[in-house]
Image (cartoon, rainbow, N blue to C red; front, side, top):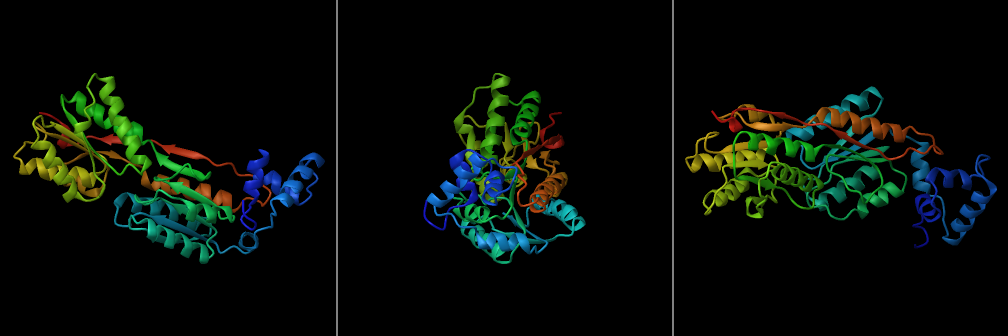
Length: 343
């Protein structure tokens, strides 16, 4: 560790104790044993630890503002999350600043720095699909800014997360298609960098295994654009023109499912009798497609509420109070419509 970069969390990690214990030991708190105080102070001296003045000033002068970084504002799911965040934040006396990374790692870095420089009290973050490095967020977190991930997070930073049961939702979607009698079910997956892509893929695989369907990797297509229905349409067209085409698709999200629907119609397939489709997220348009689209509903508003509650709990904790990180997993539910109901 370099001088000036050492934090209370680094000392806590080295000694196997909590950050709050380190903080109280450095302040000579009477509840901390002499042995622990000695170990902490000796290690702090060895590592040349100095208190982070920026973090201290932020603790002492609240802005009553929460920063939010989302991948895309246009995404209906994320707009409902923002509504949930605002519902809790405003009632608690906080204003909300929203930035969108536009699915760009570089934009996410810029946005996080801008929010930090604007002295937000904490940050709620959903990672971009390009993000595979987390130093920009770790440096902010280590400076004492509370942080909570929602929907898309990482285990590289030990902070709270609010997610949905992506595995369970995908399992239920695939199981539904199997019970409707579809035999070769394809999956439009997402970028492998996103945990939600992998969890939904695993849910799909688990349902196939449970019902004795052989997993065929040629039926899994990676949709790196994720929200581009035209790209999803092209991927589906490739599947449908192959030697042994699928008779159904479970897509990672509703935009990908819409692309699959466009490809199937262009091929002249009857939906759902010849080709079944299930999406994920329950965008508003899914009830307006022809036929209406079966989809997995995500509780976006509730996710925003839970994320805001967790963050405010951390912001308002006393300096020597340890607030353990939590992972809140919200249930999904399958909304069955005509795109997957065989007559």
